[in-house]
Amino acid sequence: MKLISFLVLFSILFGGYYMVEIIPETRVKSQDFIVNHNDTVTILPQKLAIDINSTVFKFYVRIFLQKFTLQAGTYSIPEDTTLEGLFSKILRNPTSKDITITLLPGWNIWDIDAYLTKEGIIRTGDFTKSTEHVTDTMRTNFPFLGKTTTLEGFLMPDTYRISPEAWAESIIKTLLQTFDERIYKAFNFTSEEDLYETLIFASILEKEEKSSTNKPIVAGILKKRYAEKMPIGADATVCYAYRLTMTDCTPAFIGEHIYKKTAYNTRDSLNLPPTPISNPSVETIRATIESLSSKYYYYLHDMDGVIHYGKTLEEHNSNRVRYLGK
Image (cartoon, rainbow, N blue to C red; front, top):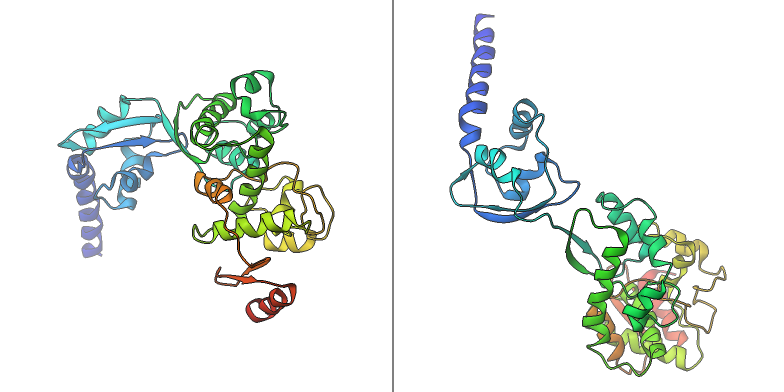
């Protein structure tokens, strides 16, 4: 019993010494870093590559930093900064209030709304409401919008620095400005209709094919089928009518709804969807514009994501049996 009591006492004393003397003097590497809105103190060791046990750090936070509030913003850590200095000085004075957001290629307006809501930047629905209401001011500032009724397709995927207090409209303005510079002014579109049709194809391509090598070929197949009055048959278009995020648009959902007629289902329709179904990257838009002609009319991906082309429906069906077992 005495030995156990001694070990318990030793552990308490050593733990106390470690918390008071060792942890505060732990060095933090010189760097600039960004704290986003929903970041917590406990993720700092991982974010800053601090050489400290995460469990021990959580105890330290619970005991010594109960009232500490982590502000969103950009911070700059100088040389020879200790953990104590990080909390007493650096994290109390952000060099900038800006934070980062990253919008992924292929996200639609509901994906972006969910992401910005999760980050604590907007309230649920604020972004979709603003993107589905194209104002006269937007059309004046960004003439490429034409008569569109939604901003889907024009919201340029990228990483952006924004104010933590940014609202949906200000974020949208930044995305449209980026689209203006990288797409509208960079490529020669013959008309607003040409631009919009390109975006519709690119938004489908973004979801149908991930390989930069294959994108121009798949774009060519989609365009050829449409030009020759064949349904383009892109399964990725099925979910958009149901206002689903990428996570909710599962293969099971597509399978259940693939033959249900909507304005966006391209399985049996000779028309393109009335709007883009996602926001494509510069690479995908370029691949759409510079699409490649081929002898193929069909394509599918096997279970490993490898694409297989078919020149005829018979060949395509053979590929389905061979690579998908159906």
